[in-house]
Length: 181
Image (cartoon, rainbow, N blue to C red; front, side, top):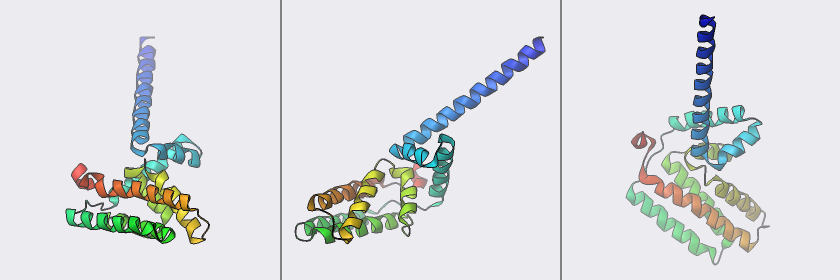
């Protein structure tokens, strides 16, 4: 009888440890990905599938060579952003397109692959999950402006959205993943 009780207690302890581990891992993913956690879980159809996707993104992100920007490069991008903002007054659609190109160039400079928008979102989500909605919104407005169907207010909003991601990519603590580890 005491052997059976010891086995039951051991099983309960192991189950509690596993549950605690899973809760800690879930909390880590929620904190790291922010709103992207809920979006991914919803798109995946279950927390388990969504968390598997997020861990795969972390693994892929760890294989990328994300680099900090040198101050001269950061200054150049900041000047280019100011130029794009100035362009908005006279040519708002072109300014939005230029903002998209500048943000994409900045991502590439940092070491993010930029060939596929959906993959960009996944790669960015690991470090910039809290600003991805801005990037998605800006990208949608950029597509509208390509068809000349975006309003001036939408274009203005796109600039604000692009600026949010731009600021985060420029700042980003100036640290690469190796410096943070």
